[in-house]
Image (cartoon, rainbow, N blue to C red; front, side, top):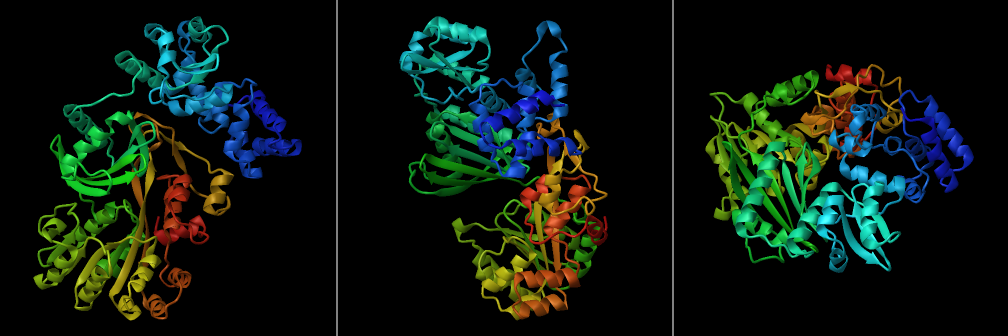
Length: 622
């Protein structure tokens, strides 16, 4: 646990800087002492008095009072007390070769190296540098033999009058400081803190180019780089790749489990070759750099065939490229596997899927799993006596026994053209990949009026929003009420990693954010991931879907025809059909240990106060 002296030292710093007064400090310390789950003092001060984290960090950065690194990491919310104790034990395993705590924390993935650099900057007041991408003064570099820099792991960056800014991985190491002062003179070194990898990369670059940043890459290098990037994205299960030009570098990030994670930073000099290679693959215009472009290509690795959609967006720093990965070999989930609660699934089957006709809408933002749910519905109703036909852009799952069409505008195989012909194929079930405009919405409604079952997706916030969006597309209210049988809204939340999960007690802040008292949340079995190799030390692995099911009964249909507001329709749905909102379903899944309250609060719209946990469990059948 945090030593009381460290907490008191932090309190004294904030008090001296007049961030809080003495009475507020005493109150915050009293609150900390009474909490069932230990909380950092700075978190309590933030919540009680509205002090921003930026203000706290600014004050502590400028204060020279020495705080122990581990305690500071805990107080700033980067490290849990239990993890600190484990890291200290690892540090003391071999007394003869005692390592620095920061190296132990990074090596065992308790903290990210970037977080460690930030906290060391706060702790000791060192400015942060990134020599891998900063423009280094060649005259300054010429003063320091590069072999000496490599031996002592530092990089000179620039001159400031008679003094020199020098980047160190550990600026508290007096031996390294003295080595730099042998070159630049005692008292002439301004220590900066940088990531060890950034220092090593800068030294490699300086050794090879004499300090120049004009590094070039040829076509074979670009081919290898793109292949390596795509292979790494596949290995991590990424859904998207973001290649973003910045003022001093190219940043490549992968979206894994719905969250962007850094993969690699590259020099800006690689931008042209990297973009050129992707444009060649996507059949885009290589010479065009002033306009947005798009394209598509396939990538194969280890018997996997991946369809990649490419979007090229022109920015002030160059072309940002986003690649969406579509894996056609993914396993099709059955309806019981998508994550609907038992009672909600029963209602969806009986009141929607088994109906002979009508429109079933699956709504949610991009990347929320709508297509997976849509195909699960298709698999549920598919049989030899039913004709199912689809119009998709593109086909993401290939299913034997149904007729699938992949839209291709380049040969005039458009949505409009396909939808005009689809009803002439004598289908029983029509699947429209997405309602995009008034024409596709009208086609779905008209097909339902003529006795077809229509399954489609829609980009809206929730179930009520899907109905209102149809009305805003100038579809008559009586047509919407008479044809739409059900709307399913969904989101994907990160799942707690089962390999490193441990029991977790909801904090007062958790309860306040999700709108519960301790009594209303009684019976919850929360879990949180400690972080392990299998979840890349995030505490999360995989995702779980949360749902909101709206079944249109007589009361809801009457409300639509009467053009009631979304809030009124929601209230009527809660009373007549037992509607459980996305937020409430998320709360129930967090209470069962599948995800965390933080994920629920981060991802789901909270449109009204949730009902007590016991009532939600009864309505959901969990």
